[in-house]
Image (cartoon, rainbow, N blue to C red):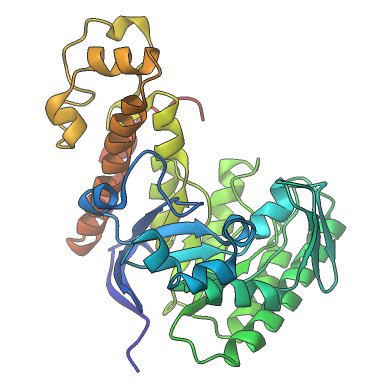
Length: 374
């Protein structure tokens, strides 16, 4: 059997590495960014456009697809790849974030999570085994186990309880997955807040279960940057070197650089698409807020050094006009630019690791990024 993850290069003086994740629907070169397609679509773009921009992987939300149109319905239509006409790898999350974000609709119990649908209030209950079954019905390439985390600054007793729940559910998900003849990956999610002892316990327990990959979850929810970096360094030391690492839901370029430096391989985030719809456009010299009045007669592209379709053809003045008029085309063109920025950034970062110039790449970019709204 082929190895499911190959580390090709590790950067000099860093834990940054370039590798390949092998899945049933193709390879994913890392470091990689997965555009978010919660409902089976990247907002504002067709899948042909997403592919043309260089995406190798998308993230779909198993919770939302379970509710609508339903996992059985997706399977009956040929599985998620056929249903949404996306031939490349798909990662599906477990619904663990919805436990966090939909509180108090969600109630965690020892054997699973009870929640009321945000659509119609109907009562639902999901176990770790159910979540594996749902993702198997969807036909995911990378499945995430059901996990639990609590808000930042929760009492240590609550964080400890969430860690114990995460470990217990991971073991049950692993057993359910082993009973299937599946070529998909099953990845665990390490929790523990910013408490080193709990992070260590969770990572060690999950490591012993031998998952195909490991996510670092429960970060980016209020902790200080120093705490984030320390937690990532601890994870780099604890998680297997021969398995991919995934930092869930975090996506500012500066944070990505710091995480890659500490051994993270995979990222997802709604920032490039959501910010595009809100008129915030990423460049190597900061964020352009296209709705600002100063761009009303600015005939320059968003970024003169950018080769995306939006920058090659359209001016800031026109993009501001579209945004102000609430034209659908505004979201399309802005999302095209932002997603190109992210995917191109990851491509260059991978190349810098391969050429052993990552630290210089990081320094140069950190010196020019002047991010706002952080």
